[in-house]
Image (tube, rainbow, N blue to C red; front, side):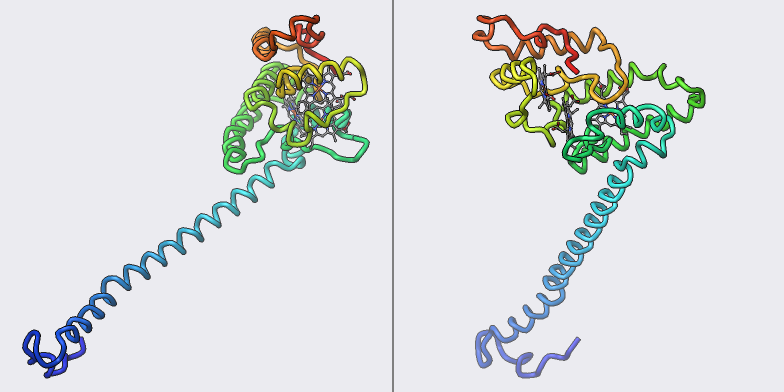
Length: 245
Ligand code: HEC
Ligand code: HEC
Ligand code: HEC
């Protein structure tokens, strides 16, 4: 503590040296000891917090990058390699006219980082299935496929096929056949954007849709259809026939 000057010490309150001088020094001192350190403390805290959060985001981004890559989904997991990955390679989403080639994650993992992380965490459940079951026999995946397809379909449905629409813009799609043009005109009129209700069995081996899924589709298309749509016969797809591809 620096010693205070005698004149300041002896000065009577309100006379001689302005009363503020002692107070000013004191206040400056107090400010330094309490306020300034608090401010510095707050800044240090904020900087540490920002750094930790940034590192967290970078780690999450990197994790998402690794676990969203086809080599992880399609190769590291051998069950997928011999099944759904090969199916994708035979689909129209592999050799596309423009060379745009969706990865597993484009369709199956959300583009939003936090949500994607949650999906990766939930996805580790599949590793458990892979570890606790014998997939070495060809065809052993088939036992699990219907349930897996069902889960995937409902996931697309619940997310309003957002992942599909990350690439495809409904208004910009020009179906080559009349059937598709009609279906899409109807869909746009009704505001039906949920691709999966018409485009299931898209890239993997065909799986019969379950009753629960068909009922969900029917209810969805029914709820979308406007009264005006009743005038003409509903398109073949909206009758719940389903598969179009
Ligand atoms: C163009 C979009 C698309 C891409 C790319 C894609 N999937 Fe799928 N996947 C689907 C859809 C849609 C379903 C729901 C089943 C159906 O109706 O086709 C599905 C279902 C699945 C299922 C459930 C089992 C089944 O046969 O339905 C698994 C497992 C799966 N996908 C894994 C993968 C993996 C691994 C990759 C990358 C190698 C991949 N998917 C790439 C769209 C895609
Ligand atoms: C990474 C971008 C991307 C994503 C994600 C994607 N597609 Fe595609 N899709 C394409 C490309 C590229 C083509 C082939 C080029 C074309 O015909 O425009 C295609 C073709 C198609 C076709 C016509 C070929 C066929 O298989 O009959 C349909 C239908 C289709 N996509 C539906 C979907 C649906 C439904 C989803 C979501 C489950 C989806 N796509 C997700 C890029 C994508
Ligand atoms: C109400 C049902 C319905 C909805 C909803 C729908 N489609 Fe389609 N779509 C069809 C039908 C039917 C066809 C014609 C398929 C055919 O010709 O084999 C088609 C054709 C297409 C084609 C062109 C295929 C070709 O080569 O002509 C693409 C691409 C496509 N749909 C993508 C999508 C995407 C992406 C979505 C969601 C944003 C979507 N569709 C929503 C019924 C629908």
